[in-house]
Amino acid sequence: MARLFGTDGVRGVANREVTAELAVDLGVAAAHVLAERGDFAGHRPTAVLGRDTRVSGQFLSAAVAAGLASAGVDVLDAGVVPTPGVAYLVGAVDADLGVVISASHNPMPDNGIKFFASGGQKLDDAVEAAIESRLGEQWQRPIGADVGRVTSAPELVNQYVDHVVSAAASFSGSDTPAAGITIVVDCAHGAASDAGPAALRAAGAEVIVLHAEPDGTNINDGVGSTHLDALRAAVVDRGADFGVAFDGDADRCLAVDGGGEIVDGDQIMGAFAVAMKARHTLYRDTLVATVMSNLGLHRAMREAGIDIVETAVGDRYVLEAMREAGYTLGGEQSGHIIVSEYATTGDGVLTALLLAATVVSSRASLRELCAGVVRLPQVLVNVDGVDRTRVFTDETVQKEVGDVRAELGDAGRVLLRPSGTEPLVRVMVEAETDEKARAAADRLAAVVRARLGTDT
Image 1: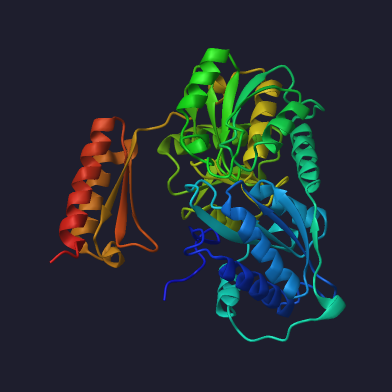
Image 2: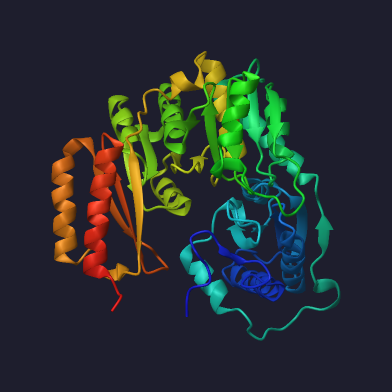
């Protein structure tokens, strides 16, 4: 049986895989597992609950609240709030756990359920496995006054907005860290439709808002961080200093400079790393990034005297590496950026504010700040219908990988990644030109398909 929890909670098509019944059971199981771990320490536990703007989030959040309350957990329902807002609020209100109903950047029909432990930390694999193992078990139900209370608490989002504005002020040393600049904000009709523009305005920016009219069905629909064309056009047409785009739950942020050029997570991390090193807040002058980060980031950081620690793909692995060694900055090319002084997870709204603060304090444009990270052309080919388990043991595949690496030398990079759930291998190649990257990727993909293909 496939594992229920993926790299970012439980996710699937709402009302098909992610049902109200499952949501109730997950709430109950999470309450029991965390109680038995001692997380509640003998007191009446409290959970912060939030969701994005998908219409399915209404019944799923009600179901999670019902499960938690039936197990004796008091629930503060913050309503629509960014995922990192829930993570922050768990610690801010001294709650015992947090739950987010969101499928992040996925299409509207999907939804998901994600848990945070006390302090706003993501649950580790062992705890998620324990929750999954307890689904549907028999248990003794509390009655009378021992059942949990569910309280509507939409005001909590304001506490989160105050926090990210205060963080940007601390980062820059100014009470108005975004003063004097104009920013276009694409909210993806998602969880940051109110919080994102409000935070940037509170920081002093002039804000032009795109796609902040959620109707329950339009989240991520051709908008947000995975569809940047409208943002690029608006930045140029309105003469803005730059633009930012969130995904549906606002745990990631990508940007567009004043000329309409895309600024990805690697470039944002590079700008933050240089700024934090200058302020002596970049622990051990080290940035944590995944194996998918572009070789251009590695080159730029090396020139700036900054080391890079690489992790597997997924912000949870970046977080694990940061926590284990105490690193203060990490993230992904996709725009999950983690600044551990202010957040326990990737936070798109915070990233936008810190980017604005860096532009203002440096008196440089976003394009100038990111000029050091020159992205090499990157080609990704998905090879499906293959035995992914043999990708690192097949001698022919590995010889071809070695040959391509030798040919590219220091001017390129090769990465083969087996999918964690599908019969698929991802072939990634970076090279000095698109043509070289494409040719090498297609060559490797052909060998993977020929050697590992499962078709008979």
